Amino acid sequence: MSREVVVRVRVPSHYVGDVEREVKLAYAVDLFLRGVVSVERAAELAGMTLYDFLVELRRRGIKAYPYSDVELREELGIE
Image 1 (cartoon, rainbow, N blue to C red):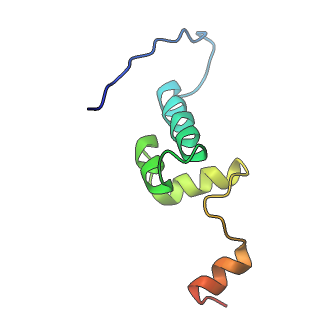
Image 2 (image 1 turned 90 degrees about the vertical axis):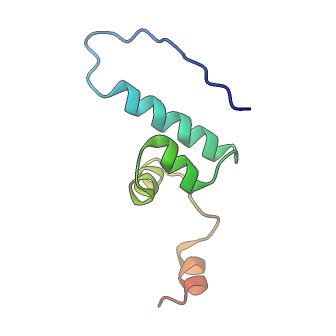
Image 3 (image 1 turned 45 degrees about the vertical axis):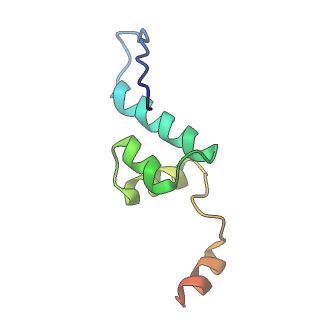
């Protein structure tokens, strides 16, 4: 059975940004890094497309898949 927890956080009024979006993204990235969810599920939890989530992971220096660019091209048959 799934359980939902609500967390309240005070955010300074001068903070600029979408706090809810940032929290969802941080949660999704954390679950992905701990191996709890797949990259596809993490993107869904973050409310993002898979492509946008992959871009965000790359921006953060996080590898989405355990392949180097060369290995991935070879695996997919791309030259």
